[in-house]
Length: 408
RNA sequence: GGAUGGAUUCCCGAGUGGCCAAAGGGGACAGACUGUAAAUCUGCUGCAGAUUGCUUCGGAGGUUCGAAUCCUCCUCCAUCCA
Image (cartoon, rainbow, N blue to C red; front, side, top):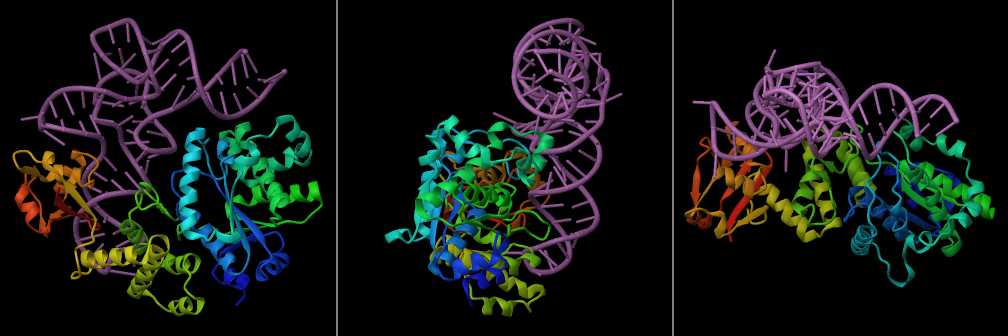
């Protein structure tokens, strides 16, 4: 199976500028392609992960990836898919985030011996001269046409600043620059980037009379059409300090039935034949597929060891048996106790299972809190330090939130 | 620069002097059902030492016994005009 066919079979391809050319290039390892990452946060998230996977797949097929850090474009902010303006980031924040991205990417992509490159568009964008830039590329962009781009249309109602309007131009300029500097001939990106990417191929054609290509990957949407990789508390991060391997595992273990196979296809490196066998699975059998998905992804993002721990912990908590060793825990110290005691509401707050004491109370009043299997009914229930220290002390709130409490 | 309309709790959105911690919906959380899924039903949703108290309706002042609501100034946003 060629790389192109594989991408297609996995449902990763959304739009292409020229199918035949792109197929030819990537199947024969002749592509030098780039994917841009704007440093909007201090960690990569699941959306970026898809892009990294794509990069890895293409790299394995002999193509040369360029990871582009948006140190310059981050100064502007991509308005795509947003109904409000991004808050502006300081230069320091951007630099900090770029560094984090770089660390995380290096774990995943092999940048050694020219197998891949990492560049930062701050290198060329920051020193641009306004008038020069306008004269150089300004004539090649039609405002009329830009305004008809889907990504701006949505913003016509809510308002779009000139700053953000220029994002497309900067991204197009990146592509031109990478083409000139490194012979980069394809740009990949999320499907929401389509119009920005076309800006680049157009600019290269107009400016240099050369052909460059663009291809977007399908956005990972769940069956309700919402972007996956988001939780109520924000994104699912790749940084273990922001989303623990256990939570990461649980996120994927809990995807809806309709979404499991799609996720396995799009996100894992399991061979297609193996995935095709799962097509028959239905009902509770899909739980097995969810376990595979969660384990595979946790292994890819963290490590096999972390994935095993997470799997072990989840089995212990949900299926009974197994080791309770690796479930998430909270450590208490001396100052958390008053006269050697701590009450259940405080405990919930300390364990970050409740955002406030009120919330903790509510959970108890509604019968949602269990300690070592016993339902708590009295808000005033307290525990001594000795009792907690003596053996496994596990609080459960709701169906899926567990915390092991330890002393110091 | 001018005119008009707007900013309400996580989000949308009602509320135009006391009955307002603020309708309704969404989301989140908890319970039932279940497969750690979905759907459905129920409860719940500012904070706290909790039959009470404290802080909240863009910001700062003011009027009033009492302000999300009225007045003044400011900030931001949208629409139309330049």
